[in-house]
Image (cartoon, rainbow, N blue to C red; front, side, top):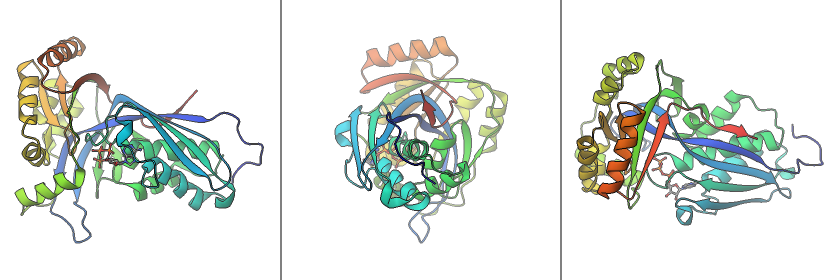
Length: 309
Ligand code: ATP
């Protein structure tokens, strides 16, 4: 139930990480249009913030600033707005709830880092706290799955196995902290376009399974083993749509990365470094090379969506 008025005077702020996929195995397109996935998600220290503040009953609005803000829709297709409305409809006295959402983006849009999904997860958490709703974490997870394949992982964070269409997540047994360098592209890639190209390139995709070598590498905590085990079934499709990504991947490996992979549907390339010092060197070398738009050094795993003071 929602708490009685007066409403909380200040907003509730939630910080939520980007994800990369350490493995992304994709099966053949199902009759419902979705692809079955077997993936290993990994949350990294690149964060968006979503703040929710009280608004008049049934008034929902969003404002966006930061990285790629101009490409983020402000209408009802915004995932944070959809999340707030879904939560109010399913768990609150809908007519008496409203929210003004403010999104501060650091995660690039359409970059394969699940920025929109992470905003959806953050809005679910922020509004549940703002409205003081009686909703369990399982309840939030169910709504997250309804919103999109990557949304439940954004609530959970860490390193996790994803199955179904990616929405069924369980924590993975993993050791250590990894140092990554992310290379952002000049242009985004549309997820449906990448899956469409995947279908053309892989007409006989079988049942997806996460490779054993990746799970063993994660248990060992050894970056060299993990680097060698990174894989992404969508990578060829992303490279086909943006051939320049091949140069980016080659440059990162040349500058000492122990592994390189396109994240999700791309175009962000994720490079694993042997340690923090190597990640700093790699960041400097890739920035100086100018092969990509921007370079960011991050680490993982980090926790999922959390309220911040
Ligand atoms: P996916 O999760 O499908 O792999 P992605 O991580 O590559 O996507 P997103 O940053 O989530 O990319 O953006 C995909 C599209 O989602 C954008 O083109 C945008 O139109 C839409 N979108 C809706 N809400 C948001 C949001 N809050 N932030 C960013 N994009 C959003």
